[in-house]
Length: 133
Image 1: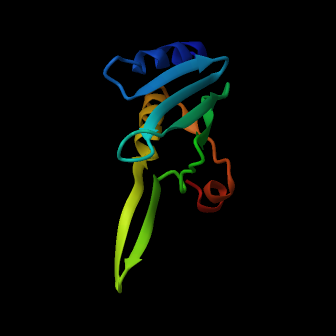
Image 2 (image 1 turned 90 degrees about the vertical axis):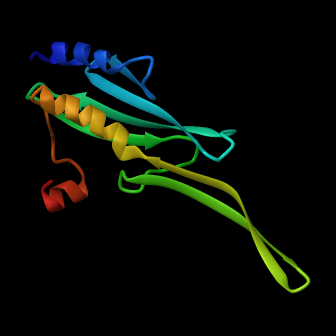
């Protein structure tokens, strides 16, 4: 497949039943998902995975989380806050916010598509160069 065919083919990953959106601009494919920041869903964030395709059938992948959250080495984004109250010797903890979002699910969709098209990730970044993955 040519680079242009891979870019245009990525749009087929979209669908009304999907929890993510795929967009293509220039030589990059972006997959973005929304997640709820608490049980009531009143605050939301987005996780974005971007693959920039090179002419030699390789790609460079970058990630970002918005709404003040970061992904911990691309695994699970978690936020948990609680408030403790003490009344007459007893204490009670009330959980006010909790969130769990596995960013690997979004990355896997894009990686599997690009692997199927014959593209490989480049060894960019300190840990990838160190461990050779």
